[in-house]
Length: 246
Image (cartoon, rainbow, N blue to C red; front, side, top):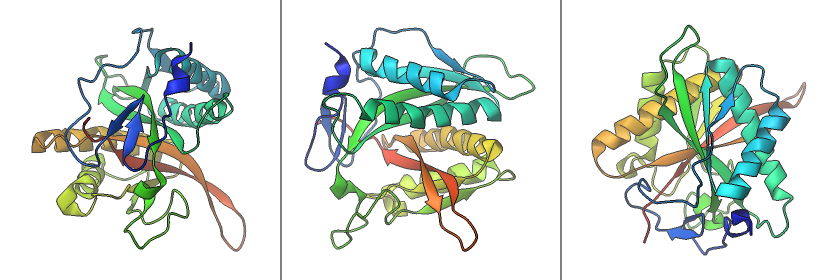
């Protein structure tokens, strides 16, 4: 029986991932074993077909509950993110797929040697369910959508990843006002998205150095930006806390 049928259990409050319900605060999920067969790592390249890569990611999630993807360079990273959004769409059409489900990814530095395109990024993709109550900025704020009451962080082509990482880590720390919120990172284009992903990798290192067990994943989606002239789609990377198991 596909593991996917159990990947989106409904819960009242908190974040749920792969059948486990987690408290709203606490240390890392590192060390928790998933129902993975340790399959081959997928590879995203600058010329990857987004639909096919998204289908492969969705298939791995159905079979193993999670998967890993490697990529090198800005264009490959951008193809991966678009494919992940596609994979969420494919999985949403599965029988018994519950609402409010997302695919997120954690960024780690790969073991491969650096090339002219940059260092390899290793991306761990996992499904999670975010309760609507967790999208509220405060008990008095209604959750009208994924953009509600989030801290916006802008990443551009010239953004220094270390500075963006410090801002991400600060927003995610409880004392920085990140508790109970999911900061939004706005990035346009492959270079900006890649810099945002590298920033996310560095932000997790900063949080690891705090030794408080704060971990997070990145959930991408498209948002329509309304203007007087035209409607532009902008890629949003939403930072989601991964709290500790009960």
